[in-house]
Length: 210
Ligand code: BG6
Ligand code: MG
Image (cartoon, rainbow, N blue to C red):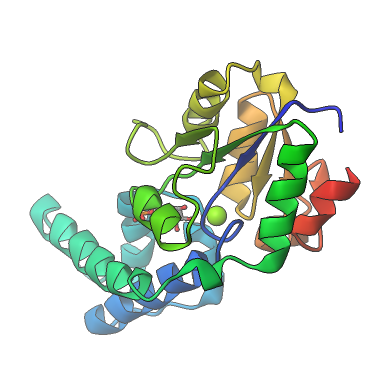
């Protein structure tokens, strides 16, 4: 592999929390009486909590005050966090585990680059607390994907120039963020279907063939 570091998105790449985001947003949308489906959910991938809420509220008939929006985002996050409490190291797939360990053995530096402010909780739940060489997440950025900030900070923490890093993403917004940061991108899931990366993989294990 020509890269020296790999920066992984978290939700939908390392673990299936993207499904929990979907369920929590769906519940909020139902409470509000607005339509929400998988296609709309794909637009929320990689996007910050408040920007996601704006997309969910697109079909809401009246404008809402900032305080009401913050309360709705909090409501969604509470149901999301309730789902996270059920996660355990068993939610880390054997394929993800093998891939991470093999890449590390090959001498690559490994980082997380996620928009989520729940990143520390999730890494703890799935037993990856302290595993990565760097964690850049929603708690240390001012601009969410597709802005490259989260990945540039991760590269900086790894002490690597962006061009030596490969980003791994399931979101179109995340692939764009990687490219805007000057990095190559390997895609899985929704972003791979959109052929948004230099590499579009069937699953994360495909990284071992790059
Ligand atoms: C990203 C998810 O990883 O994190 C988005 O793909 C989510 O769907 C974003 O909105 C923010 O997450 P959180 O946990 O801070 O609400
Ligand atoms: Mg993702």
